[in-house]
Amino acid sequence: MTTASVPAVKIEDVTKRYGRTLALDNVSFEVPPGELFALLGPNGAGKTTLLHILCTILRPDSGWALISGVDVVKNPVEGRRNLGIVFQEPSLDDRLTLYENLNFHGLVYGVPAALRRKRIDEMLALVELADWRERLVRTLSSGMKRRLEIARALIHHSRILFLDEPTVGLDAQSRERFWQYVHRLRTERALTVIVTTHYIEEVEGCDRVCIIDHGRILAQDSPASLKSAHGQELVRLVARDETAAAEIAAAYADRLVRNDKELVLKSSGDAFTEALFARFGNRIRRLAVEEPSLESVFLSLTGRELRDQAAGARELTYEFGKRGGEHTK
Amino acid sequence: MTNPAIEISEKRPSAIMLQLGGVYAIWLREVKRAIRDRGQLIGGVSRPLLWVLIMGIGLNPYFRGEIYGEVRFVVPYTYLQFIFPAVILLNIMYTSVQSAVSTIWDREFGFLREILVSPLPRATILLGKILGGTTVALFHGSLVLALARFADITLTPLDILHGLALMFLLAFGLTSLGVVIANRVRSFEGFGVFANAVILPLYFTSSSIFPLDPSLTSAQTKVVYPEWLVMLVEINPLTYAVDALRGAFIHFYQFDPKLGPIVLMVMAAVFFLIALRDFQKA
Image 1 (tube, rainbow over the protein chains, first blue to last red):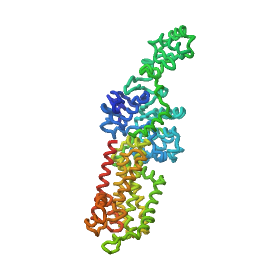
Image 2: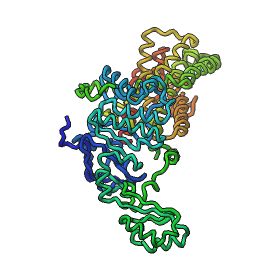
Image 3: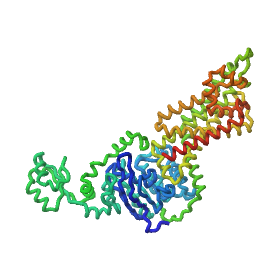
Image 4: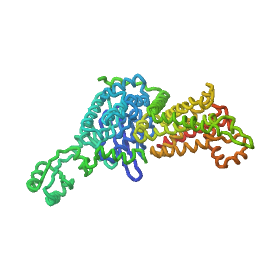
């Protein structure tokens, strides 16, 4: 149905405001079919807003959002048919069993009965939850719930999968397992995956990365090209005392990226590091040279580090609770 | 491991089947959740027991009045018979309105998103949800019928069918009302308080526990009861719902027999449309 020329997802000049805050400012991008595309940015950058517009929970103030060539603003029902979504917060009915949750999804998406049963078994096996089939969802751990949600998103043979911060709140092991499933699925079917995340290490394996902050796209390219274009070798150092820190900062004012607990300087290669050592070597407590990484790409594009912004899973949950759930106004 | 990529050709079901499947899925979920919720069932059983066996039997001997020097039943039925259809109404009312709590639950715990991003139009989603609540309420209403013997009421199958049809309309209207409330009051606590603030006044002013004596002229009625109370009873749509149920179960009407079903249908349609309008905005 989809020809190669039609992008799986296309966003054009999308703008969205919440009152006075500009959540998305003229955002445009395209994702060709079969790509693993990452939206990388700190919390509040507008990633989730963008996904919500694509799955028609929100309407953009202006601009177009197309999924396989279907305008989701004008034709939301048709647009949603091809989507599988794993939301940031759990969206399972925990008083139903695993099977019932998946069956509900299949019915709602109009998957015929025989195919539905087959897919449910297949998907439960894929995410290794087949033994739990008749258990109530409330008895699962959060990692298992996440896996169930991926299984669910694929029951209707969606060709585009949205994953909104899918690994927040998961331990390292579950996170790794989650990505294994995603990669396996991509090789098994022609699946376009769009993932939002603020974990840099998860982005390395993606085909293309779109760095987004304050509702604007700062850069988009493959991780390798981003690193060569915006990446920067960095020197991180902790001075022995505050006077030393001030002196180093003053001496390299033009190279200074950050100056608080530690100093981060732009490096221009080994010669720079050697010169730095020659001058301040005996007044430095700790020093590390950092190869160009996506972290440094983000730093040089925004002047901030992603991990400063990245709230822990626990904080996120607290915050969610304080807001009284997403939809409480 | 099977390879899901093989089954690319997938027949898409017709639009109508898709809608029906969606309504069925949402209906099934509501019903399953209700069955698993023991508290709701206990409420559905204990409420009629309380009203029929204690309140009804207790007040039975006092359902007589002296009017112009003559002691007689105010209406030609015992109090138990008189209150029986109203208890059905009460049970349906509580269950219907309560079933809308699931709307708030879905919003709080994220399941609403799963439904909203599905390829179902909002009207289908709402219809499934309301039919689910209606089914549960209808079941709770039918529980009261088991007490008919205690109220000295004999029911023919035709009476029961007639009654069930009316109860369905009533439950549909009240579940829609519950969803309308749930769309405005978005917290569980607020909903509980608000629902009670709606249910009990509506119930008490629906001429369910006391009749407006039909043998009195409207001028006389206003002498016996204060004018504001008569007005409240007359503008309460549930007055006519109770009247229709009484017509079905004890063949007693205070008003025109056609009025009840009409009011019930209008109520169901209006509340559903309001709920739909709210839901499409949300």
